[in-house]
Length: 339
Image 1 (cartoon, rainbow, N blue to C red):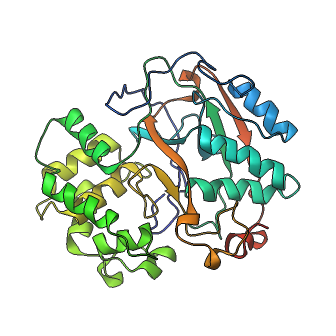
Image 2 (image 1 turned 90 degrees about the vertical axis):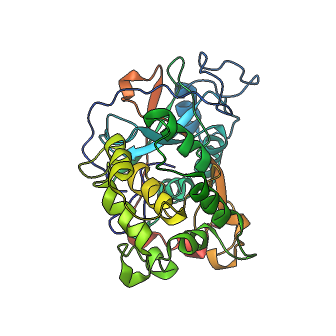
């Protein structure tokens, strides 16, 4: 994922002013190994550095990529991976980076398909009208920093490590949340799971409407967001947001409340799967069918991770790739298919 919260209630977009943000060391079972020098462990012939990736991009080459490389989309002109209030940034790794090279090779003469295609693959909603200039940062991690799979249980373990076991995220609520996302009907997707957990209307969510009782959002979900306070996209920060929820929320700490606080405090939007695999309702750029003919499994995309937010100049090595998102009138492929 990248910065993906558009105006309205969708969750995951326009960006706050960027400033300084300290790295946070994240360690956990199941996390990636500690970062090594760029290219360490890369198969022969694979892209091993951000500079090599940029060269392959410019040449429209399709090549394998080292697992030591990561990528995050960000607003043009940013100086940090995510706005400074966020404790963690979302990132894609080698799987996504290889697919971006493929997209560039296929549609280099249609740059809006490449730019919007990457944002769609990352998991941006609201792309029919997206107007924020957005670029791609490709980088290596600082020594000792780990990337982690953003499963729901990972978030709650990190929160317990950060604040201590305050009881704010009880196991029963976590089980309800995991169950809601693991019991999808044959044609149901993660937006349907979000609706099941929160009550919010699917059609209203996909139109970008604000969360409210009017669109069916339940009281636990709405109260959790209110208790958490401002999002890091606005005037808040992740730490205060989670702390506010723990101290101020008075309702049942059920699946809806837990889903609300993850949405508000760490950009886990309506398309978030909770298992570390991307998803979007738009046409998958690599499936030659219109969106309505693509199955739910075909709309899952690449692997996603979370890692400590950082300023670009804190990264050992990084390059910025300018994306061309074209005009909204050029984006019929989001629904009609790319090929």
